[in-house]
Image 1 (cartoon, rainbow, N blue to C red):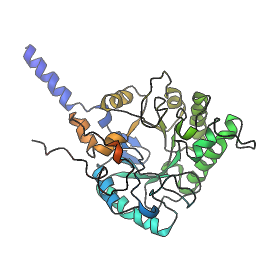
Image 2 (image 1 turned 60 degrees about the vertical axis):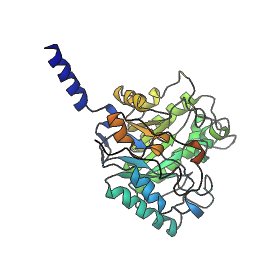
Image 3 (image 1 turned 135 degrees about the vertical axis):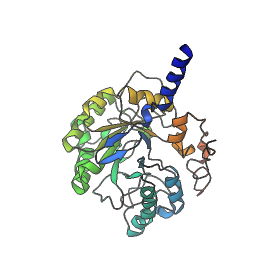
Image 4 (image 1 turned 30 degrees about the horizontal axis):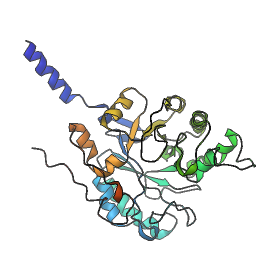
Length: 321
């Protein structure tokens, strides 16, 4: 009898999906799992034009019902965050993105474009837009009191510092519809000397203010990622932002399989964005499903310009036996 009960328990564990692999309704989009490809600057878009090798890169990481956020794309020639990053301000650049998005759609994926900095934008062939308000770039510089030293209506008080980023949110939502708009924030981070003296208040104010525009999601970097690559112990949490924001809440910041399942199961987030692990494991959802060993990422190749190495050459799992 005991042996039979043990067998039944084992069978239940096999058929019960892990939290990261459960269905989620993201606005009008039906997601088959909660593992998101984080926006990753990869410096492989020569002359600010997305390249054909990106078709393979993104399609490798696409699953039916999977959600992908593309690398940040500049909206003007003065809005680039780095060399060899893609743009979306010329017809050539827009046309270069179309086969990439088409490849994702052909495999049943949902693809959002992340936009550097500010301004009005059309979603072109993408399913939607993520506004980049994190990582020490322009919008984040407005938000943070350690870098924003303006004395006009865009500086000083918390309300003033958040004014311009929220104006951008409104402009993009008005242009393409709030149900196609997300924003990425990093209130606790100190990238590019953009720190804040009260990140809890900043994050909460932004979460509450974003509700006015009814955007699809808020994508926030965990407090432990004060710097770009290493985790730091902290008692700070995103829970106040999670509770305040009425849309979908996405978290990112050094998550592994166990932590991702835990944050979903506890209700602390709706979706989890994975960067380095998804880069090194193009079949990450499948590996998480069977708890397979993960490929190790090679940090030295993150920002090289090679079209293959450290980009599309990470191996998939062997065919299941």
